[in-house]
Amino acid sequence: MSQQSAPTAGDQGQNQPEMVSENFRERPIRVLIAKPGLDGHDRGAKVVTRGLRDAGMEVIYTGLHQTPEMIVEAALQEDVDAIGLSILSGAHNVLFPRIMKLLKENQMEDVLVFAGGIIPPEEEPQIRALGIGAVFGPGTTIEDTANFIRQNVRPDAGLASGETSGGSETWVDAGDKGQ
Amino acid sequence: MTTSQIDPALLDLARRGLTGERRAIARLITFVENRSPAAPALMHELTPHTGRAHVIGITGAPGSGKSTLTNELIKEYRRQDKTVGVVAVDPTSTLTGGAVLGDRIRMLENYQDAGVFIRSMATRGQLGGLAAMTNDVVRVLDACGKDIIIVETVGVGQDEVDVAKAAHTTILVEVPGMGDDIQAIKAGVLEIADLLVINKADREGVEKLDLYLKAMLNLAPRKPWRVPILKTIAAQGAGIPELTRKIDEHLAFLKSSGEYEKRERARLRDELLSRVREEISRRILRRELQAGGLAELVNQLENRQLDLNEAALQLLAQTRL
Ligand code: B12
Ligand SMILES: Nc1nc2c(ncn2[C@@H]2O[C@H](COP(=O)(O)OP(=O)(O)OP(=O)(O)O)[C@@H](O)[C@H]2O)c(=O)[nH]1
Ligand SMILES: [Mg+2]
Image (cartoon, rainbow over all chains, first blue to last red; front, side, top):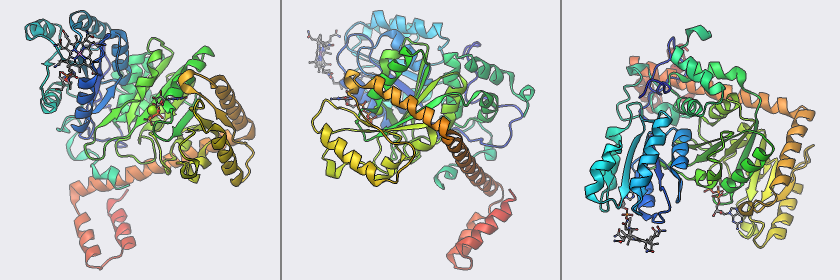
């Protein structure tokens, strides 16, 4: 996380009164699935959206024909942990750099970015050099994608550890359900 | 808690949010939505700045056009130079804990407008049509200067009426041609509506639905505010200025009749009690982690040595709240 950006949701408030502390164990990872450009192939993006939902994530899908500006603004307002870009049009070499640049301008380098769709294997290295963590082509499983996200999102994203708030001082899951 | 005790980074975050900085607002919402340990300090900073926004709730059956209508309302309010915040709630899957948050897809036109802030939320197990922390997220947007805050509920069936407690003005969206006799409108939802909107008025059956709704309204006890029925074609932006006019009228009515304060007080009381309820559960369970004892009480319940009331009183006594 860059210095300019806001403190993360895992930071502890100082002199924190006892009220309403809860661990983040239950916090789902938030992902934006976006289709940049004029690409009209949306089956893959929909499959991934549903799949990640079934993997326990909160997935925001914004539909076809998104400009880089729209994608970054949605990611900013939704404060997502990760952005998955789906592209089958071949325009990734134009669109991905613009998206990454905008993320940087908004101090959002801590957001995990990954991609899927039709991207020639020989172009993968240059895509990764932009800061895009992985490329998932046809035939990749949701499980692989979900595992990749869980392993690479920023540490406060609510993974299974629950270590962000200390031990027995935390809310227990059943607290919610008992109501 | 005094301001000087708060972590400076958090204080800075709150201050940047109060000036309307979008990334800070987004972060503040995340803290609140996740009940972060930092959330109480942040709400302490933000609360003095709340109470200015007009909160509008939009509810109705799945697919009735709530998001499309919200998008049109955003545009109309922007024409009127008001800033707009949106909280759009979608259901969490009870099986997987995941959710597809799809309301935003209808509101993309406003992405370049710094006067609009849209946030999607999942219910995360909360019944009632909203997420548990919806009210606090509304407070964040209110404090951060949004004039109008629109809360879109999940597509409701019948009992999801929490929105009426979250909003000053509640709009129920209905659509024609769904077979009026088996209308999804159940009395409970109809009762909470301050305005009825027949959306998709380009479809057949508008007059029939109109008559039906009027009949339903006539069955309800007379109240000083007469619930109007409006017709919109959200997909074409038709009927929207009339709708915002009625929404304004409703707010004026609330204020002139004293109903505004009454509702506000009722809501705060309600929220206070439910926050205390949560906190009591939390403390009981925390004590349970440290000292145990719950299992023993359950044993005694199981053996019929105690009845439920006795066991509950003992548990409360043990917890020393
Ligand atoms: C179906 C299809 C169409 C349908 C699309 C329907 C729709 N609504 O999606 C239609 C007929 C409309 C169509 C049109 C065109 N198509 Co077409 N189409 C295909 C086809 C046969 C299958 C795509 C598909 O749906 N696969 C099923 C889904 C589930 O798989 P997927 O999209 O690959 O997604 C998987 C992975 O890639 C990955 N994934 C995808 N996105 C993401 C995102 C993330 C974040 C992650 C993690 C993973 C991920 O996970 C998914 C599940 O495993 C492919 C060929 C192929 N075999 O891929 C060509 C193909 C994509 N089309 C192609 C072309 C050229 C076109 C047209 C330009 C043809 C024309 N001249 O008119 C038009 C353009 C339309 C437009 N506006 O963009 C080319 C693209 C070439 C390129 N990129 O260099 C392809 C590769 C065919 C080819 N070999 O030439 N097409
Ligand atoms: N014919 C017609 N279609 C409309 C109108 N308003 C919305 N729709 C369409 O109805 C569908 C559902 O609209 P949404 O705005 O997503 O409905 P919603 O109530 O938000 O749906 P959920 O959030 O899923 O419950 C979309 O395809 C809209 O384009 C209208 O006035 N007329
Ligand atoms: Mg909707």
